[in-house]
Amino acid sequence: MTTSPFSSPASFHISDKIASAVYEGLMSSPRWLPSWLFYDAAGSKLFDQITRIPEYYVTRTERAILADHAAEIVGQAATDRALRMVELGAGSADKTRLLLNAAVERQNAVFYEPVDVSASALVEAQMRIEDEIPGVIVCPRVQDYTHDLELDSTLPSERRLVLYIGSSIGNFEPGESMLLLERVRAALDPGDCILLGVDLVKDEAVLQAAYDDAAGVTAAFNRNVLVRLNRELDADFNPATFGHRAVWNAADSRMEMHLVSAKDQEVWLPAIDLRVKFKVGESIHTENSYKYRSGEAETLLSKAGFAPEATWTDERGWFAVCLARVR
Ligand code: AVI
Image 1 (cartoon, rainbow, N blue to C red):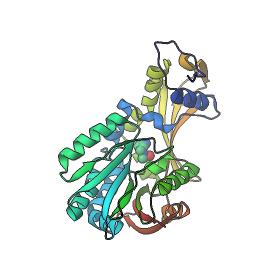
Image 2: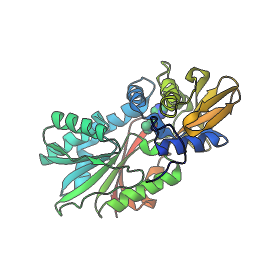
Image 3: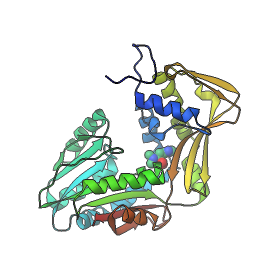
Image 4: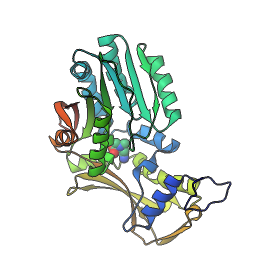
């Protein structure tokens, strides 16, 4: 039996992963929390709302690119073989659907392998997709692709296309995104492909609005992390006393989200035996969202062992979808 470094009442189950990440982040200077903490049930719902707010151009722009080029992307990835699609994350709904539809049109039936840590998200994706697109056979895989990725071998008549869309790569630090792509590459065979969606550097005002929308949905998404810590670590954060701040960090080419304490205050997190004193104006850094310059995603893919083959972008040059093949 492994013992947790954090003591907690038997009735109060806490995940060691959350406990140690929160402890480390809140003890650091400046303070931070990992952005994966956003995605509990409420946070995932809020993110879903974000994808539909007028200022958040990311989802809409990528969807338009995929809608325009799905058949071409699928055809180029497949060459003369049958495509098998893997998605990192449990299905980005209508964007994935565009590619699956194109694959079904091309080859009548397609295997779709969503990879996610959440078994329930996978079941939900499987039911939704099999229901909506006849011809798609869903093979869910419960795995944490941020740590390891294992795929079964394919038939000689098949080729894999891994979808990593939605600018998800942007939430990883540069070293981590390289490791992630190398891990994907190692799980694939020569000739298999990856489709990577990256958000591009653009006017600061556009970025700022996308991460600090007028309706306050992103602010609620950011604060929800404190609600989660209250529930899961029995903490006593008052989320209303932390302001949402979104800033463009030009030097590091990333949008940052912070939670800024509106007053001097002390927060108690009994489950990890931690008291944190915040000064007014002191912040918790909760997310980085990296934005790429033209050609940078291709360079990253190249360094990770892929040969970039094609990039599709929108008219404004706000988002790029890159197809690259394992050498
Ligand atoms: C999930 N990820 C790509 C989003 C992003 O844009 O970095 C998360 C997000 N954060 C604030 N708004 C959306």
